[in-house]
Image: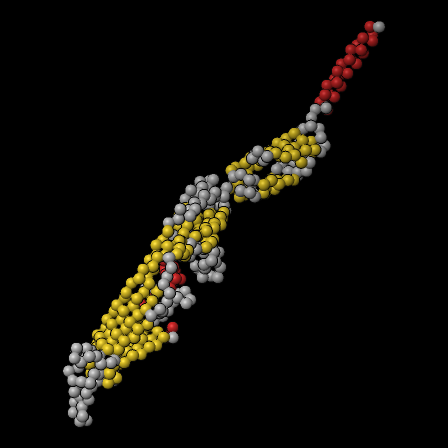
Length: 387
């Protein structure tokens, strides 16, 4: 019996050694994580592709890829390839954790830099009327990275200010604030583009509804009077062009040509012509002798009445006071006399003539005076303030 005791003890020790070796064989084998990102520098809103297919399970296979994109978004895939869109700007440590079928894990990270586009803050007046100078203000625009920004304004998509045939690529201003002239009412469309110099470019299209102005029209009657005095020899002619219809609506006129009294009778014979070719008006009158005993001068008179109806008080919408004036004076059937007028004075005959051909003419010419009195209905235009 005593000879078997050492054999029992040896067997017991061998079993203990084998048990220890089994524990070593059953320990977990960790995988090795590998990660690449393409690209690593992007603009806000762009995607990055992540490739972890170079990760090694060491033993067995990788069963899970866990992604933490650093922007609050996580994902789990069974393949080592994915992509992610970064909607925020900043620097993000993207962490990959791989797990093999033995339960082993390993992690690695890659840094992704996301450049934030400038955040446009554009201020435009709410109420704009034709003729206003609008201030467009983008000075409160910010760049997430705080870098310098380049401003490019195309103020009007209907105008090609650089003459290249494209109305939407003009550079009308490069300042954070700019001014836009409005000459007419209607919709003005333009754009502001801001570049942060790091690939962050953003464009905002703006629309400005420009309203017409309101004007109150009242009428008053006024008399315009103009006088010309000249001297004409027999056979000569004087002419003058005027535009009296630019100031108001012509109601009537009276033109009087008066000759200086002749010491010797008979009276001289002059003619007066008032012509408005654009309206088909042409009237002529010759001087007639006045009362000799009362020393009245020879005269020629042309009178025209009821040329236009009187204006009515009203309110008109237009882009400017000048447009209102033209609109109300050029109305069909109410615009007589808006075209140029021509006045003619012709010395037809000065009397008496010399009875002997070679002797000087005792009355070679005469002094004359032309007086033109025009009654107009003149508009008083007052702009009405918007409430």
